[in-house]
Length: 164
Length: 115
Image (tube, rainbow over all chains, first blue to last red):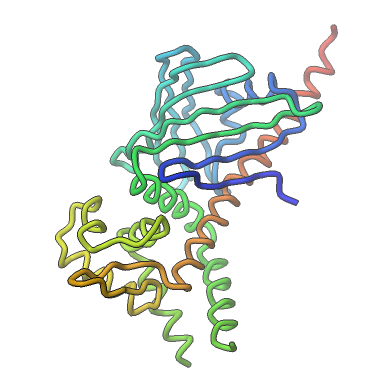
């Protein structure tokens, strides 16, 4: 059973939740300490994050750069709006692909959940079109890695549709 | 045989980023050509050309409403969007599975430290 939920809310929100078997303090640190962030926020297999800057204060800058070792790369910039240690992070971010995407406003909360943590990430995009484009872009990165898998799945449902 | 042609058409249709974005936009509801053209800084004829490709691939359908022809996702289009959401979830899950590993390591390091 998957521990992750991803859903859209209203016209402009995307809400992601995930449970972790560690206390909020640890999950918060893993989201803010660059040395820890570089270990997991990597996306598809083969990508690394050689640059990870988090200025941990309101107004502080965020900069993440990803590379795949084959000459491809992209980066993200942002600013922290609010940091409440171990409980809440509010920041804005944009991807540079290479043109910057519209700002994504993200509130991340870490709530104690038994001996673990429930993380809730609530993203707010400027409008429905931007949200749609963001989902499409996020999907594209996954797509590169698994286009063949998608092809098989589409073939499956095409065939099942044809057989009805 | 015809299902092979459909498959090729949907792949050709999905190969273009503008068409993928149009599909994603239609996931949040029906839209007219004018509404679809707005975020892309493209002319209406250019958008109409993309819409035709999506339509021929069976991913979207149009409805007649007076002089308007609003487009919406066809069943195949909805399936593609569902597929994308599943893939996005998968990409996020991969990150968070790695984070589980980082958290377990942090816990071990803490236990090893003398109090």
